[in-house]
Structures are given as C-alpha cells and as structure tokens.
Length: 132
Image (cartoon, rainbow, N blue to C red):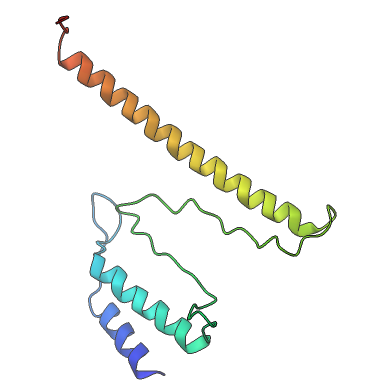
C-alpha cells in the first residue's frame, strides 16, 4: 500500500468516536473531514491521471450531517451526446434535473416558512408600533 495513503488512514482511524446520546451520531470534527478528504484525494491520485487542466475525473463532497442537511444534489448525466428524443439518457437527465429542482424548492420553501414565522414572532413580541 502507498505509504502516504497508509499514514492518512492511520491518522484518520487513530481515535474511535462513540455515538452521542443526544444526536445519535458520533462527534465529527472539521479535522476528521480534512483527514478523510486527504484519504479520498490520495485514492483518486493513485487511480487516475489528471486532464490537461490538472483536474481529476472524479469529484466528491463530504457532508457533516450533524451540521448540515444531506446533500440534495443528484449528479446530472452529460447530455452532450443526446441526438434523439428516443435516447434513454434523455429520461435520466430529465429525472436528475427535475429531482434537483424539486429538492432545492423544498429546502427554499422550508427556509421561507421559518423566516416568515420568525418575523411574525418578532413583531408579536415587540408590541404595538406607533406611527411617527
């Protein structure tokens, strides 16, 4: 095994985390995510060459679900090669794009409702306003 990768893995696994009784999840730190990112990056570096711009063909994202919602984005297949309405890829692209729009709309709607409720509560708690 690659010694750099082995070192990254050892560092990441050095400390085991127990589940938290409040959230049900083990603690995750920014350092944990950085270490896991180093492991993933190294695996990709060992597997693939970069293109002429220095980019790898694999992109990844880690989400600390203790702080953030699950990533709502579904990968959208490239549609550059679609030349016919009969192409089965057309349905895959449409499905992924539609799912992404629906998930984003739901997140936006929830946030808008939250903000509306908070503004109403602020108005209620500040009492009646007098005209200047």
